Image 1 (tube, helix red, strand yellow):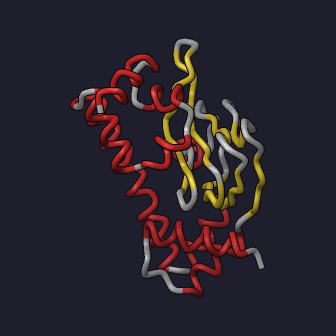
Image 2: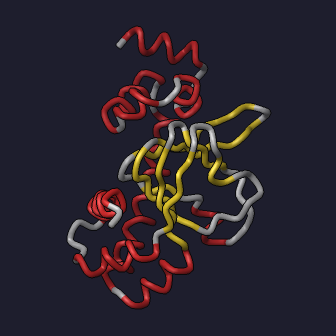
Length: 193
């Protein structure tokens, strides 16, 4: 039995719906596809259609895109996190987001079509799916509000408080682009805290 698989499902499910039964968790485990990624390897490239939710078992990945020739980090995910290119999955259209491993990583792919079949079989998995989507919407809103209303210092402090793993493990250039600041501004912010 894949111990990391069980740990990953436990962490991912507990982060959204801790009350889910062991039977429903097992249904999710049974459809997951394990994938090993090397540092720098892309799991999803621009122009591809996303067909999976990604549960991170080990390592760190990021979602990013290019804007005006610059690499902009949209999101970081590490152990126990769930990543997705939500628009591409739901519309089944090519994505502009890419997913790249920042470290050697083990991820589990949850095929969207199999997840939808499970939501029809299990109200618990249906509720888990809803909680995942709700959380994604909230994260997007919080990030948009931070860009609109918070200073660079406040954005960095929020990242330190909510995702210290990102600050410890991700390259500074990616952290800076995630926070919508230059690496130089990030260095000044870090020095003043």
